[in-house]
Length: 246
Image (cartoon, rainbow, N blue to C red; front, top):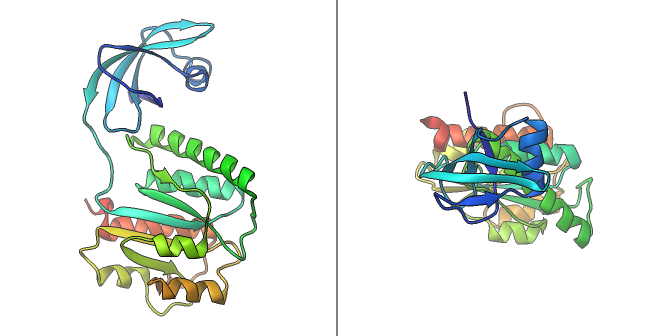
C-alpha cells in the first residue's frame, strides 16, 4: 500500500517530533481517517523525504515522530519553465497541478493583452499563494520532494527577457513543429515554454517574444485550449528531451 505523503514547511530531522499545521492535520485525521500509529511520509521541499508515524492526535492538533531520511529525488534533469498566460480559475489550477506532476521546475504566470483574467496587485498575491497550495497538493500526490518555483504574475515583456535556455513560443500558425524545434538542440538543459491565453497572443506580443529569442512552433494541426496546450507541450518536451525518455 502506498504511504500517504504530506508537506510541512519546517525543518525536519530524524528522531524529532513535529506538530502539524491545522490544514494538514485535519486532512490526515478527518479526510483520510488516519489514527495514532499510522505511517506517513513527510517532506519539506528541501530535498528527500522522511519516514514518519503519527504519535499523538489531540483536539489541538497532530504530532508526528520523524524517522529516517531518504535521499530520494524525482526531479527532471531538464529544467522546464512554463510561462503560462493567466487563464480562468479552474483552468489555471489545472495547469499548475499537471505542470507540477510533469516535473516543471518553474511556473511563471504571464499577464497578456488577451488574458480573460486581469488582477490587481492584492488579488495577484492571493492567487499566487493559492497556486502554491495547488502545487503542494500535486507534489504530495506525484512523489516530488521539491516544489516547483511559482513566480508572481509577470508582464509578458519582463517574462520574455528573463527566460532561460531554449525559448519556444506555441503558435498554431508556426511553420516549425515543437518536435522539430527540440531536435535541433539535443543538448539543451533548460527550456522555456510560452503559452498564450484563451484569446491568443496579439501580433505585437508575438513580435515581442520573437525579438526576445523565442522560436514559434506548433503542436499538431489543431488549435488547442490554453490548458491543453500547456499539458501537451510539457509532455512532449519531457518525452523528447527530459525525464519521460527513460
